Length: 174
Image (tube, rainbow, N blue to C red; front, side, top):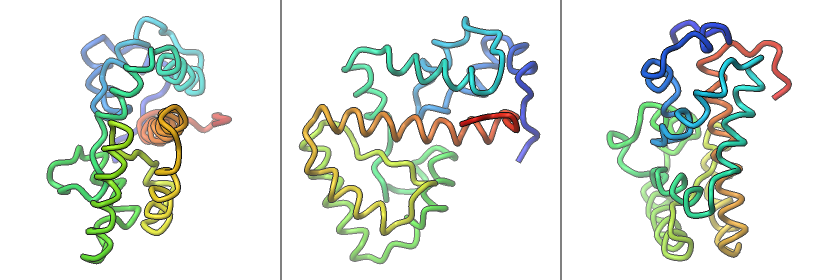
C-alpha cells in the first residue's frame, strides 16, 4: 500500500485531489468528502473522521438511506465492486462461501432490500462470513428506523477503517 498521508498533507490537498483520495471512504458517496473539505484544516486524524461522521449525521433521513443504497449487495459479483469493497469482502471470507451459503445470502439480501429499500450493510472487515450471515438474519427483525441507524453506524465503521488505510493515525483514540 502507498504511504499514508499526514494530516498536514491532507490539509494541503486541493479540492480535486482531496476528492480523488477520500471520495470513496464512504462507498460511492464522494459528497461526504466534498462536504467536509471546507472544514479544513483538520487538527488531527480524529477531527477529520469526526467531521465526516458529523456530516453523515446531519444529513436528512433520505440522504442517509441513499448512502446505504450506494453499497453493493454482499456476495455480489466481485468484479462489479469497488477495489475497497473487493478487498473487504475477500478478507471477510465472502469469496469462500459455499454455493449453498451464497444462495442463502442472496435470498436474505433480497428479503432485506424488499423490507428496507436499501442493501444490508455491515463492516466486513470486522466480521467473518458466519457473523455476516447471522447478522443479516438478526437485523431482518429490525424496523426501518432501527435499520437505517444500524446501517449508518456500519458505514461509519467502514469509513474509519478506510481512513486508517489512507491517513497517519498513530495518535488516534478511534
